[in-house]
Image: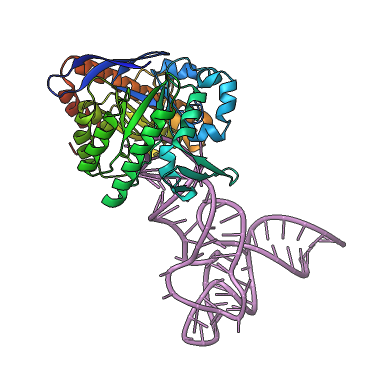
Length: 370
RNA sequence: GUAGAUUUAGUGUAGUUGGUUAACACGCCAGUUUGUGGCACUGGAGAUCGUGGGUUCGAAUCCCACACUCUACC
């Protein structure tokens, strides 16, 4: 059972402060969820994730099905036991891989055939099969199997895809047998009437939570904001609202302002591995020469392990040498930065002040728009 | 001392009948990254081709001298 408890609504923005209750504990919302595709948030131990504020993480149906296999994970006692994470887990359905691995798959009404990037073998993913995999993984929240449309897509294609995703959602619901919470995913691309149709059809199926999928996939920011603000109010108020794939501070704050409760993204850990940090004064490309002799912390306002112990000059050295520790220290910092940012967002909502805070934050972070 | 080989960007190299802005890798400088196939991708700066002279319409490329480094022999 997964339930949503609304604690407070920001009087000046409509942002929601709440709690989501799950079998593995509560999560405070709005929340940022680090992504651990292959049963690991890359380079970080579960202790480090906890110390840096992670309350819930993601796993991925597609990738775990191929390696090590969902049957093995079931045998190991489920994903929680397998990876030693005792807090909530949300599993993505593989719907994003329909988009990101588009060169390796074929879509039909029945499902999606993927050609494995590992050995070329063919695997047919249906909504029923995805439910079985996610049940074997044993996550607290499982996502319905959908298609994430690319940007841009034509109205005709997006409509056809959205309607099929709705039919797949029904099949997921019918095939689902455990008490794990199954969330529906609203699609419809960048067309408002399609978003509305998708939201209404999915609401009629009464899922315990809803997500907006298919945004934050490379579109201009204005398009993201437009669909976010249009779609969020169409989602039930008494259930968790989740925007899939958002990880930059502005996208997360805009989502919170729109009344969204959850967001996830690979961004903080990926850019960390490529040598970039998010700080209170904006993005820092640690490899840049300007930090060669900089013996101050990455972010003087940050209290994470990395900022308490290491200098920019040292981090730059590690990044330039492609040392594992550099990736780890920046990942720790970026995860801490985002979980801490969301902690602050929750406080500002409680004080009905998120809108003002967002303006101050954007100014300091260096965003020119908004 | 003799013979041979070598000398092209910070480093290592490509450039085979002489022909427009001399190529590549690494390094350097910068940018991108948003439900993670790929620890990646995209740009940029940087070389009077060892030095001097000659042949030629034209030389990194051919010729001469010198210098440098390496190897072998005396």
